[in-house]
Image (cartoon, rainbow, N blue to C red; front, side):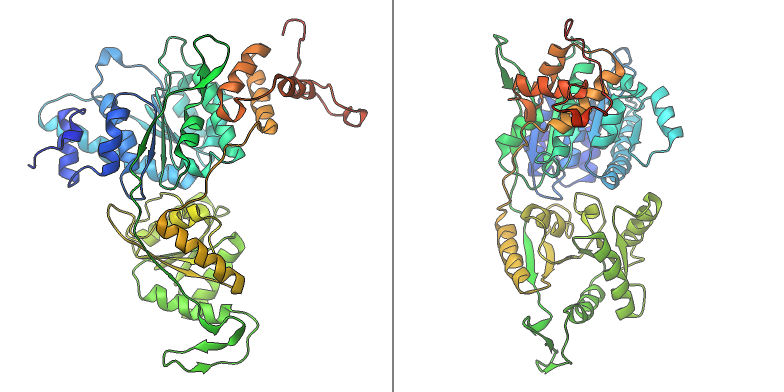
Length: 503
């Protein structure tokens, strides 16, 4: 056996032996982040795709849960993993079972006892029967989405969340700059308030491959707490671990016509110009894509709309005169999506035409190349998409970007240049999205009576509402309780009752 890496010293011996048997060495992301994570500190980890971020976040929790003394066990969810995509949630839940089983086997080989650790998944696709079973016998590790967490906090199942110690927010860059992110951050503050008063603050772990500025995202992840004098709020401490070595990209921009102003002149292998005049570039794109797909084992093609995903998959199959590609997007049923993903992983279909459903860190096996049709929506999404190819440590991600028209060619050139340098867009946290706050207020009041001051303090602990004026908060309560600015809204039913005398 090789000499165990010093970075593993914080873990029990079976964990270290299992890791040593599975991997050559810890990645830079793991070496840098484990001291903070194992110590229970909130951490924001920036590292390239395929650098082992998810295992870096989970391994300390797995170590703790497997070897926890029986007397210290508590009944309830201990680790909460929040993913922006249902497909990513399924993927993580499946991949968690390997280290749990492997470490337990390594412990059994030396006679060391371990605890049983249950993993559960709760998304919009989870059947009601499974939801009820998890409420009765909660898993120690729960994999979910922001929307399902919100619903859990407003249901009887919230009692299973009182024991949560660690929250892992994956692909945090995809949410923190949006109202969806503000919604999640409010849910985290509700979760913090739900826990026992004497419990240590939640350990919050954020993961991303494309993120800046780090300090802004760390402040959003950690949320706010009262200052020592109680007069103001200050950010909770969050360790920032920057292991963001630049991902290596092999990028090409390919145009299937000689002149995008003259779509009829297609470039042939011998360099001659041929073809009749065309009004669309697609008849030139389709054969080029078929050639790319046939030259590789597995390919993901990304497009920017569901309709185009369906149309392009059909056109590729028609051009190739065989089933060459399948469409993959959010409107496809869960079972069908999983079947499509499995077929690509097993090599039974050479290509998938996807939207953002496969953009984030889903394990799609050994993908050889990624083709992006049209400029990606953002530089960050382009890096995430091309990063699906060569999704393992040290691998080069190979991608082709295909512009659809002349101005798109300029956008593709600008995006590819910034992707190579890792110069992603700066994120900003939405300030005071009152529609999001209104949803949470109604949800909280649906459970129990809430004091106004308590509600205001809870809202201001979420970073998007840290500077929420009291006048705006009171105005929102006025609206929700039926005090409308004009008679035009008088027919709307109030959502809550506000006893202004008692607060």
